[in-house]
Image 1 (spheres, rainbow, N blue to C red):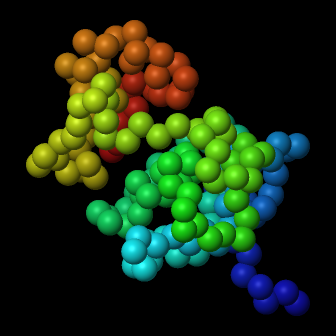
Image 2 (image 1 turned 30 degrees about the horizontal axis):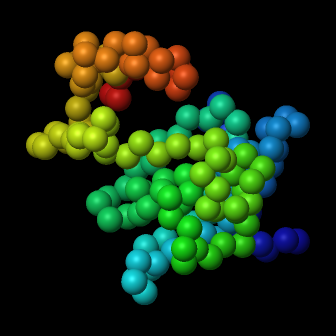
Length: 160
């Protein structure tokens, strides 16, 4: 009997599967095992495993300071000094500092302006994606349409 706990992930259909499993014959686009990172000797990410199958849509949720932005910066090669990991593979590339791995991080910056919301509770807000950031969507309709196409966004999707 194997007492080792198996790490699991979720495929694009919402089904659980072993973290090291392939989707059909396809390798995961992100496969990271035991990722560790610290800011000035203060652990920020400790032992994270991340497996993302092809074409998956991922929502990264956590409290302020939990390491969400740090993880995204690591995945996109913006942070690479001080990383430790057992396995690091993004689109077949095992170098965390490679900016050409096909992954980008936009963060809170859009056209050199900070964007953000105050006083909005994202967990209870019930509006469709096409109702969010309406002024921006009107001003940059071509860019919005491109993002909708590339990311496969359903503009009628609602959080609740």
